[in-house]
Length: 212
Image (cartoon, rainbow, N blue to C red; front, side, top):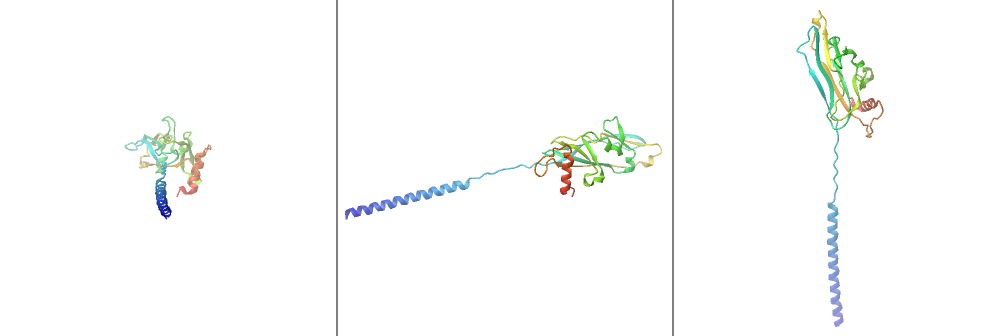
């Protein structure tokens, strides 16, 4: 009987010990789950944007008179965004009668009629006729304009020549300029690398609803 009592005592000790082990294991499991749950990763991405503004030198005359009136109007466009872009410009006289009396120059030496600007562009520019739909009626800069860079000038000076006896033809007018820019990559982040990539980029943009 004494031995039986001792065996019962040992059994109780084992039960207490096993219970303690289970308790420790449960605590360890709970602690492990807590630290696993708290681990996380956070990624941040910055999106580039394209933005432009006119960089223009303009010294308007006080008034247009009979004879020659010359003034500075140097039109460039600056890429003020964070990514390279292609740029196009619309430029037109608000009054076609006054346009007939106007000449333009790129260098202050060689002058040409305002109507002939499209034939006297600098090498990096191209004009697409209005007949070509949404693509037409604009002057295009064929080279990629990097961020913080300017386009070539469209022209540098304007000269209005009013003949004697034509003073009554003088009217107020504006030279309207408007610019647009697009990114240099397609929807798959591929760059337009071909020689006329500027045109392909604009065609893709306009075909996908960019003109709306």
